[in-house]
Length: 327
Image (tube, rainbow, N blue to C red; front, side, top):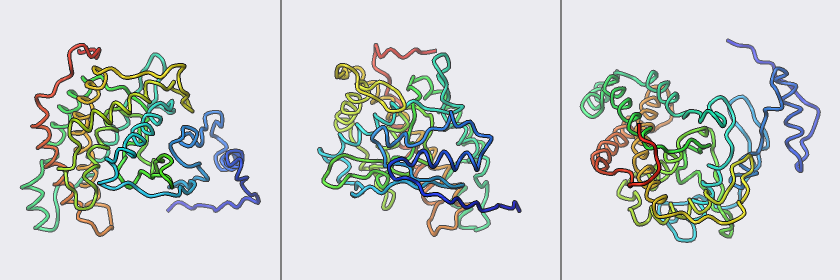
């Protein structure tokens, strides 16, 4: 077992400038790190999260946001969903950092594919419990079938031309805080955050309208609602210049119907990957988690919805003139 030495620092962080103190601590703990590449409080600067207070080996500490999480009902309220859409647009305009971010000549790569590969390697292929094994065999694909399905899905999705941006990747209802008095929204729990396709974050959020307890996929937003949500999102996204702290452009840019329709197709197609990802995630949890939750049932639920939606979306194609280059 690795021996870990606890370090104690005789200092207090200045509430008005946490970053200076954090840099001093990081420099002492990780002298080999290049502090010029260290970026802190990016979500806060973009107006999407509370300030980062501290980090530790397996987590972070950030400021408290007075308010309440959205619910299955409030997430579609006309005074709430535009704020959520605008906040996510601001996240997507943050310039990503790290090995997957790319640059002007290299568009980068999605963190999700590597994550899926790792999870699929960890997912169980059989269960000791006969009842679980029977359900696993009868209601889920084999590992080989999963890999074949994922390869086909990846080929289809990468043809859609959804841009790579910094994504939250887990925008479920409990991760959205409506500030006290309805003065905006903030996001929490960015541990899955990383470079990914824009449409995944949106499609994943739409899937989460079903909730995490008593999951009800009939609550997936219909086309009319999605188009209104996407128009709000694009109005902010197109009116922001990308950067560490995205700033408004000189003029507000209103999205065209073609842009809204294109993102509608991309988000719905990528909602399939959301089901696939969290289905595999749930299988991994059946092997490693000690939480009292039926992860196998959740995996079955996600893959069942994946199959239903995959069939439903087969005829959905990008609109003519969308500008996406097809190979």
